[in-house]
Structures are given as C-alpha cells and as structure tokens.
Image (cartoon, rainbow, N blue to C red; front, side, top):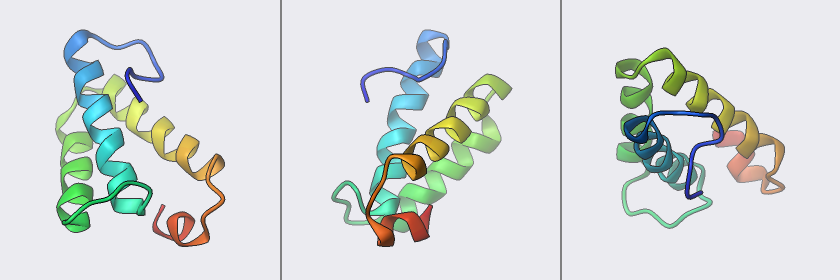
Length: 77
C-alpha cells in the first residue's frame, strides 16, 4: 500500500502506510523477523494517533480480513 485508504494529512498517510506493513507482518502476509514487535507498534500507533488515523487502521484491518484467503492469517486478524 502506497497511500492511506482514507484522506489523511501527509504525516497521517506515512503512519498509515507503515502500520499497514506492520499489520501484514503480524498476520504473516509479509516476511518479518519479529511479528510481536510489529503488532505492538500497530497497537501503539493506534492508541497514540489522532482519531482519523485510528479509523484508517481499523479500516485496514477490515480490508485485510475481507480480502484474505489464508486461514492462518485470518485467525491472527
């Protein structure tokens, strides 16, 4: 993902793109050496971000669960 799914500021967009990578890493859809750190970063970003970024992260989770056929990945979502 190169940009957010919703309209965000430049900073919000950068956060969204980074956190989407973390979401993919945690769910096993992207290689990662530390999945726990990826999910911790994703959750922390959600807690520390503005409401519009939190909304974006929630939409990312929904999109990833809706468009994913990998059962292991779905269980982690």
